[in-house]
Amino acid sequence: MPLRDPQDLINRLKSIALPYPQPLRDALIRRFQWEILFGIENAELAAARNEQTHIAGCVYRSLACVAQIVFARTSAISSTRRVLYGSSAVTADNSASGRAGTEIWRLIGNGALATACDVLRQIDRQLKALTRSSEQQP
Image (cartoon, rainbow, N blue to C red; front, side, top):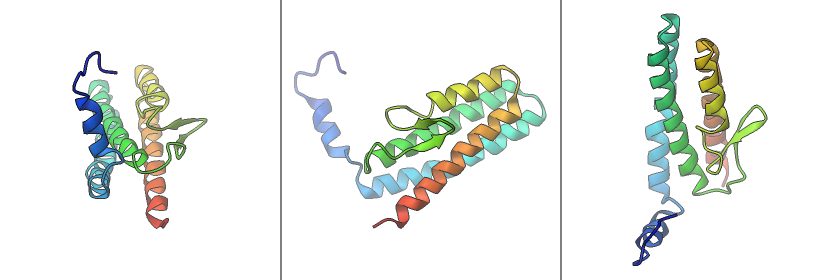
């Protein structure tokens, strides 16, 4: 919530972009989808060398890309559609850096680097499956 917006500029800007125009939505998904896996693969290489800081950087970027895709998708579809992660979900209201991200960061902090990469890879697979299924719907 803005503390002060006397000209109501924020709401006017939001009305232009919500829901995201289809070309913007498609471009965001294309742009960020590949980068999730790129980050995971780099994190896995760093995990083999036990480079915790490098892994954290790769994971952070991958989760930021997940969030971009989730927000692009949920601007055009019902926010009840979710990318499932175990018993929790990644939605615009419960961002990727929320529950799933918390689990990944806990794993990294505990030194379970490969497991953290596995969890992130699972999120990537689920997000891709959800994106494919929404493309096939009319």
